Image (cartoon, rainbow, N blue to C red; front, side, top):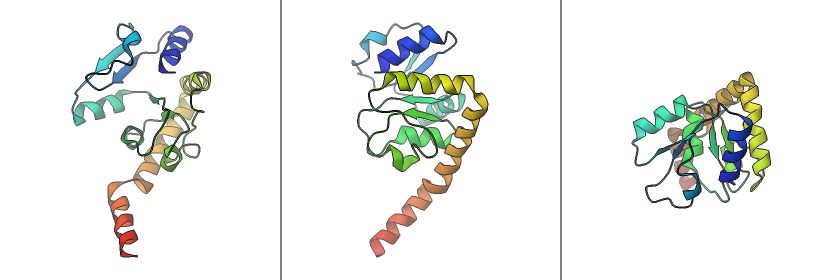
Length: 154
């Protein structure tokens, strides 16, 4: 799906470029390794990752499965709208409520959502702010830790 989304976006939106943050030995994306609009990042620290989030327009993260997902949370905390699949626990992170999600394996829907963000920066900014507010108000570590303690006390 990722390969198809990249191909369609780079064909339909010539200004789009990607920063991919991947594990060192990722071979699944071999067909994209030499793509001229992808910059690859491996083994980067927290500060560099946060800088990438803050410099990006959105987080594109197609998923087939997901329980907990730090990338979604980190992007939201930086005010970066996630573009991801409606799978697993994504709705627990505000998916479909705070930010739109796309059906799993639907590259066309993901391309459309990304293009909608590109052509409506005001809406993208609103979703980014709502994502940040949700992350701070519902998903921040002190709040989650307190909820865990209360759960165990009960």
